[in-house]
Length: 512
Image (tube, rainbow, N blue to C red; front, side):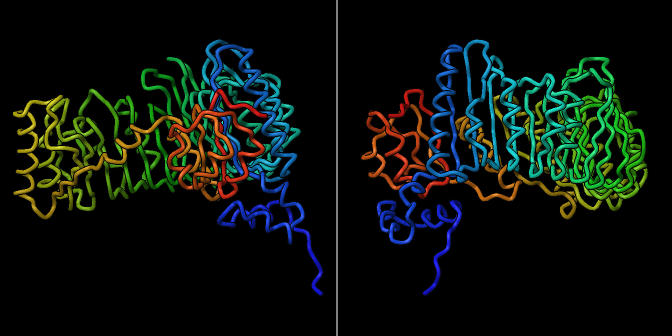
């Protein structure tokens, strides 16, 4: 007789999740004595609450704590993903006491509005989640005196970390976080503006991608020292309306992709860099200085705005290995033709074909094709005419220029229509749904399968309502109007066993 074995909760929940009809789970009692407890297990929870006052914030947090406590007691170790979005109409602080019931998380997303900030207990609780693989904190959070705690509680499993709109993130905190995260691969900080120390040293043996987008003031000086041997991609910049003095010093030379969103100086060479993107307000001489330190770039993206003009061949001369250049918007208007051949250079122009600000420069196009002898010119266009911003006559002139090029150089000029269908669909999505798609993308970055989700929006469900719908139907029609009734969480989760995440998004939800 084969001896019975004990499986962990995760394996049992995975087995139960494969049952087509949740009402047949009772038959599992023959092989699993704990089926009644495990049927409540969910791997993801999403809370999205809005409060009008500090008192309501406490009430919403109590609801979150009650759900997390019950989830842990019913199925310990099963909850892996948690997203909490809190909004408050008046200045308030979230305590985050509910995180004590979420000690099995691998992915955490915390989002707060400008008037609400995450209190000190939130960050302290996050530090105790030693199984976290990804964390994102949107909004302000209490960061004073947190440095020793970071040093004492390293994130052994953390792979992805993002701070967004967290202007109180300091240089010391980031450096301590890097030191406490030996497996961190992706770090992103938006609206970073710490000037208490004029330099940030990025030291990490595992970091692969880094994004620092700051909000430094005019005249501020800030330097980034990169000491990360596996770092492949670095995105760096400041608000376009400000002119801080930014610089980068490379201690590790394996960087392959660099994106600069504002004027910046490089202090030493980076010979292995393959892709360079330069956008924002730049003086052309500053761009030329960057080229001197990145001679082996093969792909160049230019979206800069500059009032000066220079010869394109002299401008690109330091890039001895350049194969492809992409012009965005008005970047091409900063150059005039020269007399050197660029026979290995493929040119791409990305612009709306209504050319809202100026007609295309036919002389530069001809210089590329006739003098510089480029093998191909690809124009990525949108529509033939935009009657809201351009007259029919002006649109005709723009298209006439491009069609003339097609007639004279049919094998070297290509027009490609840009598809904005996906972009328009994303713009039409509700913000919450788009954020959920982004969260799924971050899970994919961390090597985790995407979640199937269910959302309750401003409605309360009974068990009978849930049994009437298939789980997939509830996924695609989560915002449909259903009969109003009180929702008993214990009874309601039963038919959702096939789902991988449960979203609570209703201010009127009650736990009975």
